[in-house]
Amino acid sequence: MKPAYLVCLVSILVILSLFASGCISLAAGPLQYFMSEPLKISKMPYNQTIIDECIMTCNNALSENRSLGNGPCLLDPMTDSDWVCDIAHSPRQETDNLAENQCSSYINGDSHHFIELSPECGVITIK
Image 1 (spheres, rainbow, N blue to C red):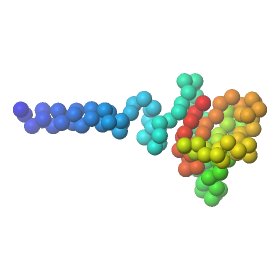
Image 2 (cartoon, rainbow, N blue to C red):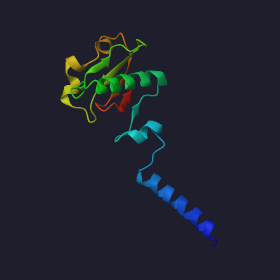
Image 3 (tube, rainbow, N blue to C red):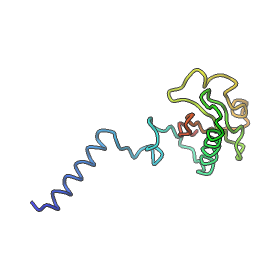
């Protein structure tokens, strides 16, 4: 066998083994590589600008040394009033279920969609 053929064959085998082991997944999309757990994204369409707004707000809160460990609602509602931006934990913690940490416009039905970020501003859920 030619050396170039062997290199190509070994590369293909390595990539296939990464897919088989679950280290690489195409199912969750590009954000998957920033998460320790699979992203939970509903089938409904969403706008990347909305996600960016939520993440930017979270990063600004962190840069202001605001504590996000209790899972507060960050944007209630967001610029698009059908969405809210909430901080939560994965796996979910009891503090995430407290009324004071919920986005009221989602709870009362004024907003219909939410983005949950971790306290480190990683995307958990888009629904």
